[in-house]
Length: 491
Ligand code: NDP
Image 1 (cartoon, rainbow, N blue to C red):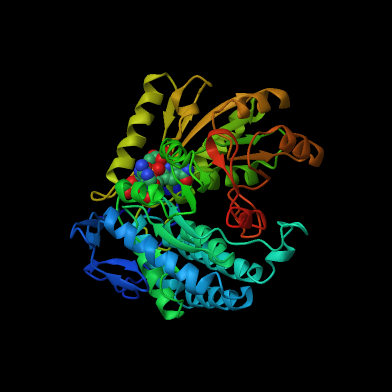
Image 2: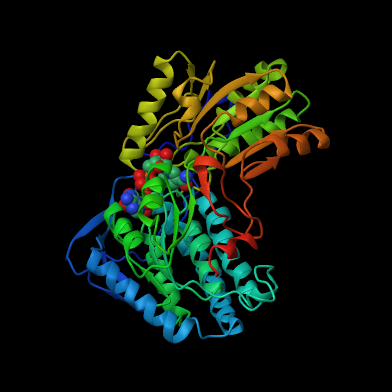
């Protein structure tokens, strides 16, 4: 049974009555085809796979494993829709569809949030307050751009207004299934492209519900196509000759494979890959606020966040105090049923991911770092990992270098700002960073020195559709979000 947050000694703990969100709002079909040319159709190969609820291991639905023939059908449908309808439509008309999709997402937000929580394992509070509203906000935001592309600063007098690229093949991960879909589809459509999107194998359900939303919005058939499947399906989509643009979010390893596949072709590509962000706390930081930021930075979404603040760099003079308060705060985190509105940390998305988190955590211990988790009663079924902190970590430790992608924080210390910068930048990644200090001048200095696409100051994990997001170094290239997010989808 799911624990209702018995993670702490009773004297520290608020007693909460369970506050379960109702599942009755979602209607999950027993099986799903692929979404091609405006309708759900059976896969050509007849193969399927199961998607499960990671909090209970309950099978939710059978989902089609799309073959290269299915991908081809979807790309052809996208090409037809591009040539006949979408690229010819005025930006003003396209924006009406995007606004309509955004409004339907808002109207069906509870359904989307519950489904996301069930299929992914994330707490309903986060799906409801972060994933779904920000996903809808992306559609609203890019709807606003659709008829203003000429004014986006992307063209010159000689080049004329920006033109769409054609068919976009988009592959997304399992950590923010609906939000990543919105990051990919909204700018593509706003610029006049059509898309074929492959959701992650373990989290296809909100993408399939989004397909229904496209039908409800009367989006012309073929403008959005969804092909479900595993890595092979993604590979077929990326390699398809008639795809003009590839957009990928996921691991650096697969990102490199994709870069090789598209090298030497006409395809444009944007890659948003892994990260190992430094969250840097100076001795003049507001400590309690910083502790909230550290917790949000690494335990939000079970740490399944590419820009998670997984390396805490804390100034030596305040390290003990920060750690004490952090542990006290971690003791109040409630781990358990994702559909309980009181839950802070939900289930790990899959058995594979859990195995990876366990393996790297064991390595951390074997390499000599000190491991600590609050007393934490984990549910008997499903995939769970307690919030964990490693102290005494050095830069050579694997847990300081590799993306764990789980609720695991590595703590390092520094003495001077220069040392903090050096340690923060000592990573093959460069997606995000956080700086906690009282001094505005130090924030600006640090932001200039840090090789990270996003630097948060006295906050962490803040996302907004108007703000570009992307990486340096092995965290990928191209930007998503904001005006910059249009650049990847126009000529
Ligand atoms: P992947 O990079 O394998 O998956 C991302 C997406 O790419 C999924 O839709 C996946 O399909 C698909 N895919 C897999 N192989 C290929 C391929 N050869 N060509 C095209 N598409 C492909 O990440 P994983 O889910 O396997 O997670 C592994 C690790 O990656 C995690 O432990 C984490 O460290 C990191 N990760 C980082 C993310 C980020 O945002 N930075 C997001 C997700 C993971 P399928 O789901 O079927 O495998």
